[in-house]
Length: 379
Ligand SMILES: Cc1ncc(COP(=O)(O)O)c(C=O)c1O
Image (cartoon, rainbow, N blue to C red; front, side, top):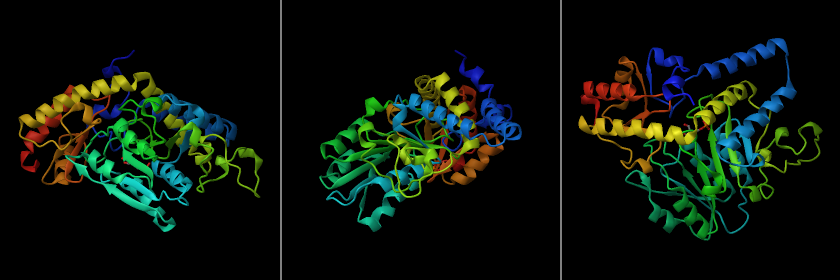
């Protein structure tokens, strides 16, 4: 296996910058760049290659399945996490007594929107609060009841990096007979996911962050025995049992999770996603988690040494790849870091430092030095 430093050499951005912003968008590898170029070349040489595009869609589906240790038939390839969430929300049955959807104050907006949009169909949406930056499990336990249809949680919060305790949350949902959905976008590729271990109902995410590729491709995993019971009304011809049937007098959804898809796949982006996923699988998510954890221990120690305030949980088991640091003016601090050649991002008063396998100790030391230089912007 290549060393992490050897992989780093595949990301040209490190020639000029300290890129530590994978929670926003991954660095671009030469493989993903090459995949995009290949798409353009194929267009010049072959034109419209629908057979290849459909094969590519299936290869990407298989790679997503491998990533989650899932069955291929349980994976849908969508165009964004939002599209995945909308397809799921369109499949929920609100006709029975279960009308409550429980989300959290740590939700990414798009996840909450999917449920609030269902209020016009009778859904009641309840937000569980956060305590010390984590989902408050006592509040969750009090809130989820026999009228709860779905519990939705982010695996890693986009604002503070908190990592959810999925088994504990699942148990609360299950004992009340509710479905459970995990928005894994801020974790997938950096936090190992095994659908059998989690035993939840839905997982959604996308490919532009820790999966190394691009906007335009999301995914959705659905538990096998739920698939044919689910009838998404957000649908289309790529969701049909036979894509080529061209039927217009009925809607016959696929027996697999493909029923959650809609229209023409995001073809140029599938090229890129295939390349990104292959590299993530080659490096191994468990190795990535261990590498990033070591970097983050160095980062947390450095931030504390210079008097900064960490907004992510201290316990390495309770945060994902992203570490957040409080700032008096987060936009000014992002700009000050950029002056030092460091690319990071911010949300909600915090700077987000999000390392991946291509980052190293020198990157962390550069971030700490830049924080020290701009101490007046730390809160
Ligand atoms: C946790 C989480 N969920 C969902 C999204 C939105 O994904 P998309 O733009 O693919 O719908 C993001 C984007 O940052 C995110 O961080």
